[in-house]
Image 1 (cartoon, each protein chain N blue to C red):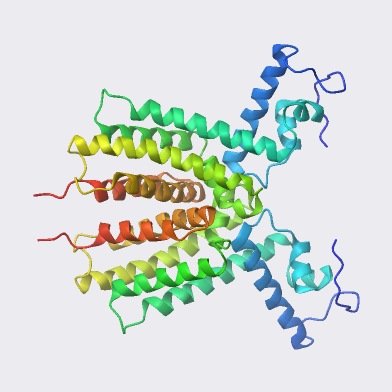
Image 2 (tube, rainbow over the protein chains, first blue to last red):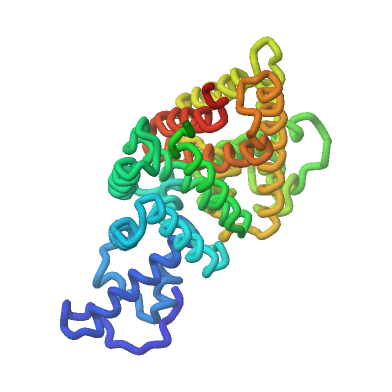
Length: 214
Length: 214
């Protein structure tokens, strides 16, 4: 175990005893999100999270029963964080529905660039390593995808109403297709340390849904 | 360390001293391929490979300097095994080029079903966890994808010549698109333990490359 440089009284800290401990929980979540978007669940140890946040083990176990409980909270937190991000872009009525999708994609690409294509998608990472994870994560991960897909389908419905995509498009199906392919593109972007796979998948997706020329 | 139930003389076995040791190497590779297609590199320990093959640690280190060297061989072996599989389906001149692609996809799906969607793609798994892997794996993984893409582009060229796909298709780009999206579909198929993501990605891909109706 890595010793924490921050001195704290031994034993379980009292819940909500002061805001320091509330911040600690948030910091643990933040460090966990960073680690899991980079390298997934299996390769992430609790000790390295403690080292980042500089708290002793007892502090971690005050908030989370074990690594699995921590993982469950991280999936939840990331799902919500990302759902909020999607809503931010998808409800921007200043621009057309299809342009909102493109704005989200451009932002996601910028996010990956910022971290030199080291950070991917937490849900994609954990989906990939699911067989080695606690079985309870499976349903939770699928639910997160389904939530994002519902938001995306709704946006595609708007794009269809605006005549930006073909009238024949099954929007629920194409939203699912988008997230299936997008996760592949994120995987490849991390591997190649380049945004090219994101761009290429996007062009293909847009070509697939656009109205056929008359 | 897990003790092997198979008794062997201690010490380093002589290289090529008999065929038993040649088989051992193959068995180690086989067990490694199974483990890495299921759960990737980081979650796989040498000890569990030894347990499957039932040989002592010394036997492993006779063939491989360390886990990294083993990983390098596994990427190489999987890349070649899969390239052979692609050639088998893509050069089957009894059927049309596009049907050859569909036959490969059907076979890949059957392969995933057979292992209850637990085994994915070794290259996709390692691509996803690349940031936690020895840096030397990156180039090797990209090269494997590039090899598969070249074979796929060649097949798409044939499909274009046969009028099965649009004349405007950039076959190299679409082969790249195929593997980007396909890895996303394999990831999702493992997560959902279902072939639906493979089917959906395939329909979208075919719709994208087919000739526009006149």
